[in-house]
Amino acid sequence: MASCLPGILPPLDAAEALEVSMVQSVAGTLTGGRLTRTRPFRAPHHSASMAALTGGGLKVKPGEVSLAHLGVLFLDELPEFGRAVLDSLRQPLETGTVSVARANAHVTFPARVQLIAAMNPCRCGHLGDASLACARAPRCAADYQAKVSGPLLDRIDLHVDVAAVSAADLVLPPPAEGSAEVAGRVAAARAIQSARYAGQGVRTNAEADGPLLEAVATPDEAGRTLLAQAAAQMRLTARGYTRVLRTARTIADLAGVEQVGRVHVAEALSYRRRAAVN
Image (cartoon, rainbow, N blue to C red; front, side, top):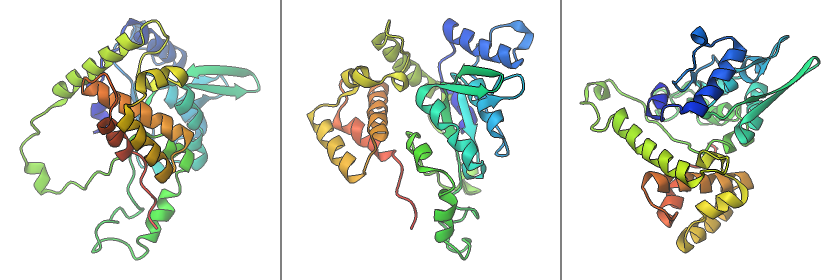
């Protein structure tokens, strides 16, 4: 599923292709010296070091988070990564850049990525099946999920529980909607955002912040009321509140709606992080 995501994203435009190719050139991975037109997809192994993920080395080179710039960074088995390694992503996810400081160099690389992470609910992976779960359930789930820090989870906009796929599911007919149809909706939403932010140095809702975000994403009265109630009940951080606004704005764009409404806020809130297992 994660590897399909670049296929529904719009192709790189000329400026984006130049940015991606510059990173690849610095890393020595640019093929034939030609600009790349495909969005990057990087999936480092969970044994990757901090330098491999954020950049570094004797001759400082970009890491995986920069090689995925304007594309997808997929981290499978998220809790298996070192905690310090994962927490090194907090700044890049917030700012879209990563600064690598070494004794002989101080370099800033671009790192505007879509982070996709996958994890089992617990180490054995059978938390929801009493016949297969380990003897420590559900305590083992809390311990396993605690390996990922709260501030990192707070930077992930969509938390989705994916049910296990059975053998019977594999013989079902293909879905009615394929990647091409989804890509069409994404392209239409991106076109709306490109027109909205033209000349403001911002490409997408993910980059909007401060007064600009308030101007384009403030919900209607019903939406503001719901968001205020949820902020108190769900104990949203300031970062979480802002991310709900961005997500609601994007949901409205996908629906082709100019004003962010209560329904868009409600859907954005439904994707926020669930409470930890007790």
